[in-house]
Length: 293
Length: 113
Image (cartoon, rainbow over all chains, first blue to last red; front, side):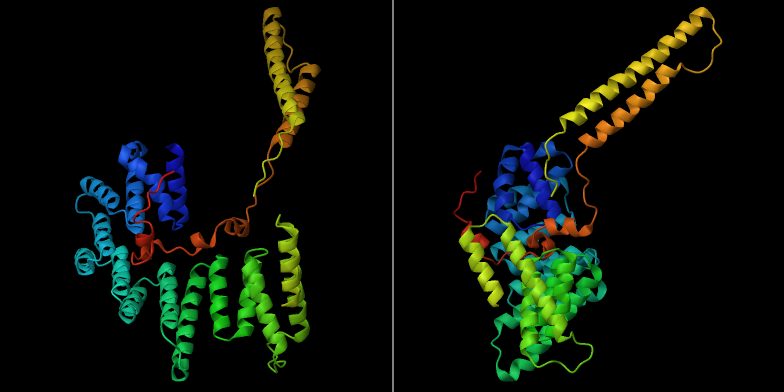
């Protein structure tokens, strides 16, 4: 029991999305009433389990948790938001929207309800409206990196959902530029997180600004030593740049530097794959592939 | 990435011995002072052997602590970040949506330990 509570706490802190684990651990806690022994943490566990239960479709468990929270905190905006999420999960989107609207009418600055409204629009199948709402939200709460991340995701999602014809190429480029802009904002707010740099680098690569992408992939490896995805990104960029004609731009990385970077990335990748306890055949195959790439 | 290293028995021994000697020197001081009180002596300061025992025991105790203590933890942000998974670094809990496969996949699955 103590262990389950500890794992749930760790999951709350890391914000990892593992609803199945949360329900598996949290369901016995809630059903046996042992959760009450956690004192102040109990209400956080109820909230956590409620959201996880909605995600895995265990509506009765979610209902139970939300009722317990409602009894403890009647009329609280946070609990009403959970009730809205419950309605969202079962598909009663309009009713959920009413709840969020009511919360925002009482308190305009309730960011959680505003974010739910954005996701509600997306669930309704109105991506353009969702983007509009999120842009409006970010206009006010521009230090919310989660919001910027979500906006970048919206732009990228839109690219995935539409076929890109030749006449839409420009629009596609614009979408990548917009997503890249969002990632720049995120990096300004959270410069120490290498995953954001990685995302930015990958968007730049898709945008075909390989030179800049290379620099960003290098930043990823700088922030997180031997980051394999970053190293592969470097190799992708250097091989593209080495194949292309040497750039006349004096600011661009020189051919010798590119070759040196490529060599270093290959060396690190081989070292990373060589150090693990994978089978020898796996090691030789991956080594061959890395060297040929 | 703190690998639990084997406990240093020599260090533990040094700690125990150092503590015993420290305790003994303290006790000797007490004995010495009560002796002085009994004979009404006016001697100030401690005898040399107690002082030496005290200093040696502190040195031994310190050495033991250094040997027993675990490796230092990195204070670099980088190592802390490298430990976390991409799912937790890229998580957006306030933007969850429920129109995903989770509700269909887990609906009839009993999640048990």
